[in-house]
Amino acid sequence: PEALLAMLALWAPPLPAKPIKAKKVYDVEEIGAAIKEGALINYYQPKVSVASCAVIGVETLVRWHHPVDGLIFPDQFIGVAEANGLINDLTRMVLTQAFAQEKKWQQAGLELRVAVNVSMDNLASLDFQDLVVDLAAKAGISPHKVVLEVTESQLMGDMRVSLEILSRLRLKRFHLSIDDFGTGHSSLAQLRDIPFDELKIDQGFVHHAWKNETLRAIYDTSLALAKQLNMESVAEGVEDRDDWDLLRRTGCNLAQGNFISKPLLAEEIPAWIEVWKQRVQTEKLQT
Ligand code: C2E
Ligand code: MG
Ligand code: MG
Ligand code: MG
Image (tube, rainbow, N blue to C red):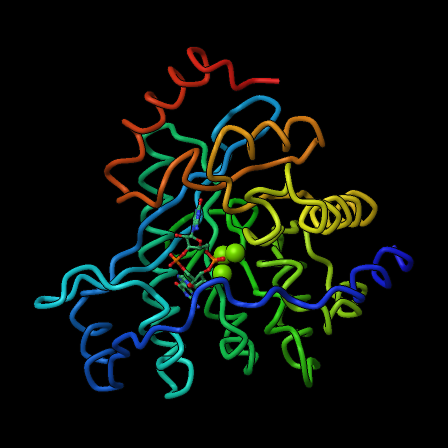
């Protein structure tokens, strides 16, 4: 792992592919009201096993059903929420919805893990640990059904409190995932200190990695690192059959992306699972 870490540290993060376009960013008051009024809705994107094609779980991705502007994506409000002390309220709301939904799926006989994105700002106080434990207990779901995703690039700076919270959550059997892996190379040393269960290779190193040497090198190295550190590997941003076939050839554990399914409303998941099972047969997706 040390050698792999050193190799990965040599790569700089990719430059943004598109010129940055001015996008409407919402103000604090409006976002605060949206949280209170229940206008933020969880969508769920399936995660599947590459070898068996079994649906293993879903990742929670929040969207804002804006009364005037329509469907708003997280990049237009998460940053503002983080910068203005709203992220704890937002995460509490997302966790509450996700855990209630997880319970419903279980009652319907669906065995799915539910992943939730946690902001580094949520890991500033030990209260967060109590909050997660408490919400799961109240919803009646066990911690090993929950995955907490933390973005690699946020794992920087003074990590003592965040480390403590993550370690405590893991002791309680919550699963920890390192998200967008490969985009925050300056913090790779943190991997030794935090017991992550899952490594999600950033979508920038997955789509087209089968035909691009540089992407492929980073993809392979990330996968090897996950294996050596006993983490489950997840490829995100799987967009087409060529991407999928690379995962099969290289033995990546799990896959997520638009080739499998875009993020869906909770109600759409059961019907999607049936459609997926059919696709696995007709398109011969299994290894
Ligand atoms: P993420 O956690 O890395 O989530 C993956 C993002 O990639 C999602 O964007 C998803 O819709 C998108 N995606 C999935 N499959 C594909 C694909 O095949 N191709 C491409 N090009 N994109 C794909 P989304 O939903 O816009 O979320 C963006 C980011 O916002 C997330 O990145 C996550 O960091 C953050 N986020 C989303 N929900 C929450 C939340 O509830 N709390 C916090 N703190 N952050 C959140
Ligand atoms: Mg994520
Ligand atoms: Mg990601
Ligand atoms: Mg991301």
